Length: 169
Image 1 (cartoon, rainbow, N blue to C red):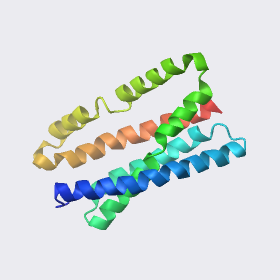
Image 2: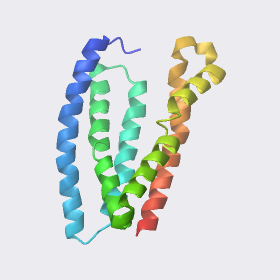
Image 3: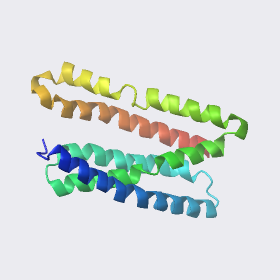
Image 4: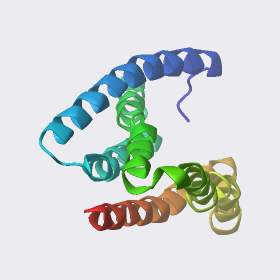
């Protein structure tokens, strides 16, 4: 464990999120402007896998460190790179989808993201892996279970994003 009180962690993590996500939105907007000025119309789909990949590495690495400054640094960097992904997804959908289908495509995208992207099944899957494969560690079984699940899900998701980015071009 990190031995950080929950109240302290919550206050610091929220502040880090505030100071990481707001500049990230401006940086992401500037990057999209630069890419569109260079006539790179599929820029959001090119940037998305790399930004999410950096965020994922930071979010997994934070499970393995114990120094407070490094924990908060990794969480801040992860939040910075993850903050712009919804804008990049929206821009990519707008680029690919005819206006009359935009609502349906957005709804379908978020449905697939919830079902396949992990938000609907990741917590039960991590609990299942922890219980059945790392049960001898007791309450600490969550860390190797997270590593095992994320070690599969993150590379798979990044490969799918890179594949989709290649198809957009």
